[in-house]
Length: 277
Image (tube, rainbow, N blue to C red; front, side):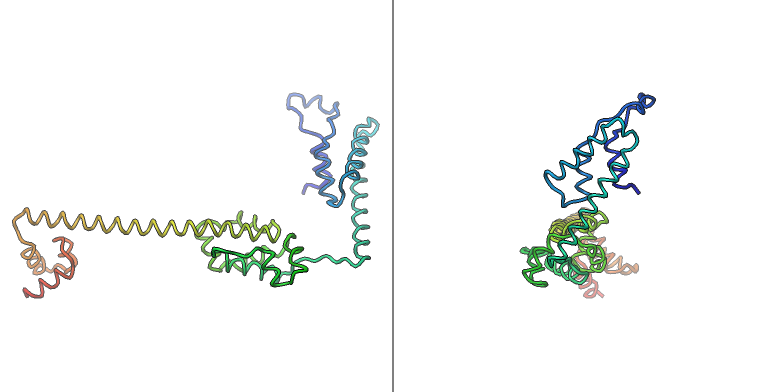
C-alpha cells in the first residue's frame, strides 16, 4: 500500500523521459509545491493559511539543499510527525474543554436511509438534515448531516430488498459504483445521490411501461390487419367462412384455430358452430 510519504515523494520527483533515464539520477527535479500542499492538507486537515505555507516552505528549503542528498524522506517524516503531534495536542485540548465528537450510529444511519428510501419516489422529499432532525433533534442534525459514516454501506446492504432499491436495481441505477458514490459522500450528500438515482429509475420505469403499452397496441393492430387479410382472402375465394368453419371443425380443428384461419372472433366462431351443430 502506498504511504503518504511515498505519494509525496512521487509527486516531488516527476517521472523522467525514458530516453533521459540514464542521466535522470544526476539531476534534482524541482519541488512540487502543489503536491506538497495537498499531502500536508491530507495529513493534517486542521492546518491552514500561514502555518501550512510556512511548513511547505521549510520542506522546500530542505529539499533544495544539495547537502540533504537522499535525506528527503527523513525530512518529510519529521514534518509529518510534527503534524501528527499537533493533531494529538489539538484533540487533547478539545477534550479538556468538554468537546465531544458526534457521529451517527449504525441505527441512526439505517433510520435515515430507510426514510430516504421510503420517500425517494415522492414528488417532495425531505433533506437528510430534516430527517435527522426528527431522529436526533435540532442540536445534532446539522452536524451529522455534514459528516461521513462507515455505517452507510451496511445500511445499503440491509435495504437491498426495499421497493425503491429493487426499482433502482431493475433500472441499472444501483450498481456497485452507484452504491459507492452514496457511501463515500456525507450523509446529506448520500441522500441527495440516492434521490437522484431514484428519479432516473422512476423515469426509466415509466418509459418502459409506455414502450410495453405501445408494443401491445402495435401487436393488436398487426393482429387486426392479419384478420382482415384472411377475411379478404376467403371473400375472394368465393367460399363463405361458415362453410370453412364447419369443415375445419369436422376435421377436428379447435375454435381458436378456426377463428385464426377465418379471421373471425373466437366467440363468433363458437356461436356459429354451436348453432349449426
